Length: 282
Image 1 (cartoon, rainbow, N blue to C red):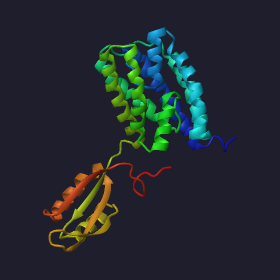
Image 2 (cartoon, rainbow, N blue to C red):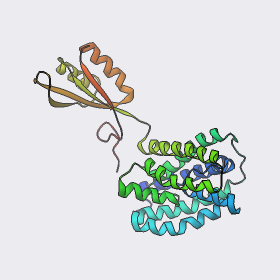
Image 3 (tube, helix red, strand yellow):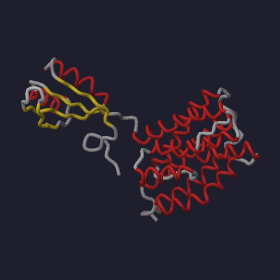
Image 4 (spheres, helix red, strand yellow):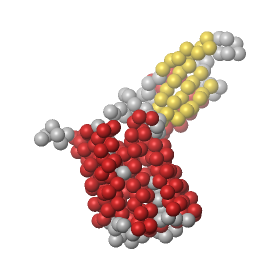
């Protein structure tokens, strides 16, 4: 029993519970009251309620059954078990929060903040290596087998659901839904990658050894030497590559300018940096 309830499983379970509750708040406080079909089983259930008057939670349960079979077949038993839990608890939270007051009736605000809250909830559930069922399962399958970023997979799959919104709502509602879908995709990726951003810095200088010493000793960061050849003069040089948190980049830039104000520096964003000094996780 202790082996089953490992720290990782309990952490994943917490992500699924919190994420499902956040998603339920989003659909009841913002999306459904403003007829925003931001893709997924949420969007399908909103369309069906508009057309036939069937409650959201009932539709969500009905959609999940066939897709859970697909989840077990293509994503594995571990993900499947947690997805069963998510697909059961999410409609429960939707039913629990049904009578909460609408947060805003402004469609633009609802599409933006609904996207943020939905993306946060969906990202937390995905971080728990599960889903709340519905088309989120299809998004995970697309992510796993087509190697698309999870946010892009969500956007592509849910885009088809939004097209179905044309049957129930006017074009303005559909366009606001597209804004919401875009925000969801960006927030999902942000939750997956994390808020900590890094920079990849490439440095060419006549005082390379001094800069290397400064990075190693003063900034306590690793640095890599790379052999390069200047195309214009065909002279062999060395270039330094250093990856560091974005918040430390300003200090690095100031130190480089103090050592060599004519140094050549190229700065690029670095996402999902793993290893010593950064995060590393399975």
